[in-house]
Length: 67
Length: 348
Image (cartoon, rainbow over all chains, first blue to last red; front, side, top):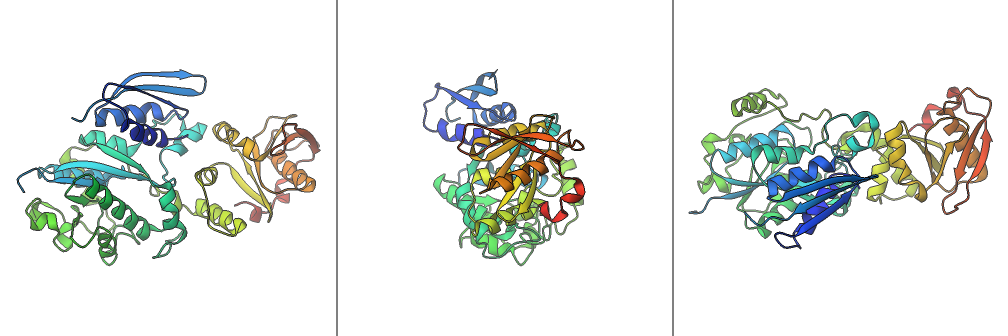
């Protein structure tokens, strides 16, 4: 799955989880390492970690509340 | 209106929408951005596919613009809904398979829905009169505006002075005098305004931001539709049109041949959906065969693929073929076709 789909999936999923929850985004497009954190910064969420395992990139997001 | 007016901006990631946001922010408008993903957007996936592009900084320009401006951005997946826009455009296509006027109308209509659902007051875009031959002409701008409804809630801050007054101007939410009257294809006014705002970095995509304006891409899409006998497509179809050489030696099948490592890796993810082949006697690309093929067809495909291996001048190249749905591959020993044996008409 290539960008911006990881961002879109994360964005849609985050609407269904509570503030403080950790959302794990698993994707393969290296572009997600920039795009997902950028999306988080402008929408009030925090990237907790970014790890690469084989071909997969795993991004953990601490879900923020409405500013 | 006592509360701060809220506007939603259509953000492409280019300079014009960036400027439009800044113009309204300077007037005290609260802005959030919306960006529609049709599947044909140039940025994003294509940068991730090709190895030669992987050294370039990967960023989504719409997200980058939003961050520079300090606004939220909502990226909306419209892949399914967009099919009707592309396959049946009311206002036809541009120079290629680009339905620009219908596309812009569709996006404004979707933005209006989003505006109503989220309690915003108006929509704005970075459009400039006369900038684009199809969607940004003075005659076509009302067609797009109509999709926003009859209450004049679509504002174009960069050329507003050349257009009828809109509701945000009439209501005094926005001062018309502080908007602009940009006109035509020159970029000088935008570049000057960018300098005034202190924007020293912005995306200027050469050839636009949509694959549908690209002639080579449109030819491949047209070929796909013709072979299917209808205009159906899914996301995988339109992704695969972006990679590889597409060679159609016979009406009923084509061969997609990776051009470099990044494309081979990308195509590898699709190999189980296609009959596929690669050379085992020499280094060479992965190839996908699209269509129902006989053994003779496979031999021809293998000869074409062999042409793009390091054994192109060898008398024999061994090609391993894996037929779709069959786990056990087999090998074909073929003589590579010479360049002259591959007619130009076969290349899409």
